[in-house]
Structures are given as structure tokens and as C-alpha cells.
Amino acid sequence: MKAIQKLELANTQEPLVEETNKNQEVVLALYEALNTRDVETVHKILAPDLEWWFHGPPTHQFLMRLLTGASSYDSFRFEVDPLSVTTFGPTVIVEGCDHSRSISWVHAWTVTDGIITQVREYLNTSLTVTRLGNSTQSPPSDYNPPSSSSSSTGEITSVHCPSVWESSFSNRVGKSVPGLVLAI
Figure (cartoon, one colour):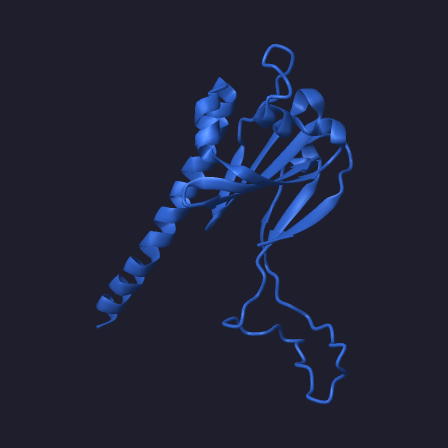
């Protein structure tokens, strides 16, 4: 009986693993297309209404310049060779660094049905990724549910947000960088 339950559990997890692998493959295909300047593939992979978030100095919007064609290949080169790739369902986190420019970068891509719909780009920023708690998880030990007599303005209660990933290359650029948390 236990063997059947384990088999059923494994079968229910296969689609999630398959989706995770496909999402990672989509993002890696984008990097390959960017490095080879394959504009047609880039257009196929990115949603036409790509949502973009950027954290870093405005002069360092290298990925945007690559994706929009604002900089020509001859006059501009930014290495987009991933050093680390981690996937959490539809979110693919990619990290790298460019020692010649003293830049570390993290890209957090959202992939929906094989198309990249969102990118969050962080340059020279230490990033920690957390998962927001949900109702199926037990509350933290210091959790106190609000009483029915609490005010209508609401109360701030602690939420369990475990860290699931941290950038590691931001400390290699030789300078102090700000830190941010991305909740998925």
C-alpha cells in the first residue's frame, strides 16, 4: 500500500518538475539567443508586453539595451553568461557577474506557457528570495491571531517567509551593495 502511495505522489510531482525544467530551458535559450544576436528567437521567447523591473544605476540597464536594440553589437557588449540558475515553478533566477565592469547581476524571469512575461533585473544588489507562507503551512511559533475585538484598521501579524535562495556573486564585485528581498 505504501509503495502505491509513494508512486502516486511521485506521479503528481512529475508535471511540476517537467514544467520547472521547461521554464529553465526557455530562459537559457533566451541567453543563448542574446549571445548569438538571434533576434528572431528573442522575439519568439519574450512576450510583446514584457513587464520589466530594474534595480540598479540607470546607466547599467544593459539587458534592456540588448533586448530593445538600443545598443548595437559593435559598440556594446554585456556578458549574459549565467553562472547560477535556480528555478521555483514559473520563476527562474539567474545570476552572473562581469568582473571587467565590477558588476554582479541577478535576473528573475517569470515564464508562462513557454513565454517570458516578466523580468526583474538587479545590478550590484544582494538578493534574497523568499516564499510567502500559505494557509497550509503552520504559523510561526510567535504567531498570535487577531482577536475578534481588534480594531477595523487591522493588525500587523508576522508571516512565515523562509529564505529559499540568496545571491552569491554580489560580494565579488569589490564593493558594498544594497540588499533586497524578492517574495515569490
